[in-house]
Image (cartoon, rainbow, N blue to C red):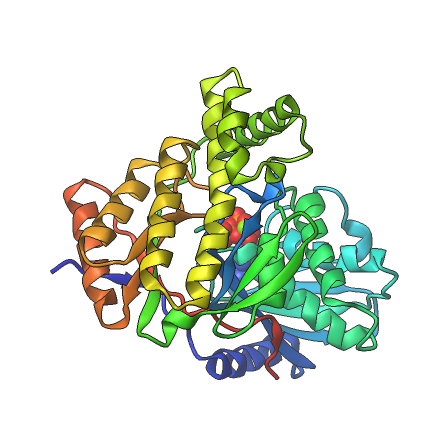
Length: 397
Ligand code: ADP
Ligand code: MG
């Protein structure tokens, strides 16, 4: 027997109570409140956000919590259970690329909200994250959105900040202050998700539709396997994919590849003169169509069709978009061979996580098979978690 490593999602009430106690010990008074926001996985629709496409993310039960109290001065005192030191400063210390490290994700949100004309007082903040960090499950959006919903409740009249304002501030914090490129899917789903629904996100105009996770009722669940393969070369590769799809769009005379309909694809491919551009284009156009297929499959509670779309998505990311690595392919193949109805890499690729659509009573067995395959292949132990589509950012106390 291989020992399996599970990242479980602790009860919200339990984490909230413990964090409030910790805040009181550390700060010397109870927090004004505790808020939290989820990490996410993307069910399907990968590498299409920057092509104006569609994606279908869902909120994890794994959340990041923020205990917060406003202060009477302008001091920010920020702490995290996942970081060693407490950061002290004011919003004057925050700007493009500063402060560095984890503080950027918290202070950056406050800084970005001030752009909306919101008067931000000093605050004591203590964070406790239960989204695995750096696994492609968006602990970064979780920490940002937890802080953003706290500020909305604390300092603004309820209508002063819309969900869109919060999402925009979190994206700005991550892009400008933390200096990480993010397209907005993570923040959107963390704020707009609904328990037991996946979120159809149209990256052209950021409109959203909640789609019921019907297959959950018939006993299917998403198993996430974090391969723990470090992302090497990711930034350069990511930039290259953005460049090549932009130049394919330009060569085809469209604003984004979203404008190419599936039945126009053969003609479009015939007009591109490089094999690489043809394959990148084919991925984007077919992937957007697979998102539509997945939505129809969920509407019809059709596990087979949903699984097939996931499998085709992975093949396209492996062969046409070339963003998988052997550990991702191995996890997908092993999941399918041990009973998953579908499996695919999720996130940017080059490492990170795989999702598998698995019967509720088979999750342990599929995880066991993947862990054994990794061990036999000389790879490090993966980490597993279960991802029933869960609730959005909100107040816990
Ligand atoms: P991902 O979003 O996939 O987890 P990122 O690299 O985008 O990976 O974000 C991870 C970073 O977010 C961490 O390195 C850290 O700076 C910050 N972070 C997320 N959660 C926490 C937390 N609970 N405490 C401190 N920092 C956090
Ligand atoms: Mg992130």
